Length: 287
Image (tube, rainbow, N blue to C red; front, side, top):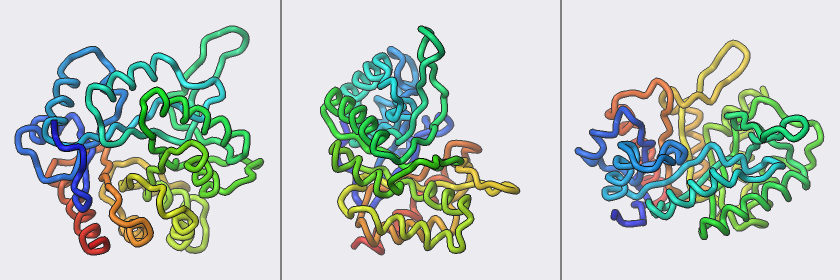
């Protein structure tokens, strides 16, 4: 297997289907590859064979979208079983998911439904306790800490008693997890809040986080519509996100960094060029 430690100044890329063959054959110079865990839960098959081949060449980060760790009904046992099997097989450098909920019971004795979306949670003590308990359960099962990602959210709750930064910081303290800081999500939320200076607003969020909790950073592109900004991961990283990323590096140091590009996936050369831009900033700001 590849070494478990990614070069600290070499950014990673998301390993997507259209790039499988070239990444395996050409082995471009990236620090790690990241995949969505749920795409590899099947017993065998071509996709899992590709992931095995990638793991022989690169450190692999497993990024989940389905644990729904903020759900009051708890973590789905089947999902956790499959994740544990994948972790044992791949031995990833990091395992991550989101600070969200998605699972809820139907009326009466019906089945628990999954919304197939990353739905925001209220920043309250009750939500914090619930999320920390679910994170701890998963960590105990996997025998390793998780990284929890901040969301791009298009609604908020009126009963919040904590700021998002306070909430995520407390989650890391209570559960022992780390933070996957999605810089693009910070900028998207600041733009949608229509604050006078979105970049300064997002920088202030970063400054409220403890310096030692960020275990990975995500960078991506966003889409501006007539009345809302969407975190679509379908374009190059925007200049304001690059500026915010530089601020994050100055605060947190050389954190493993991923270029996310999930829709309108470009040729591999375009994705690698974005990764080089992140690598250049890592080398310049974190010597």
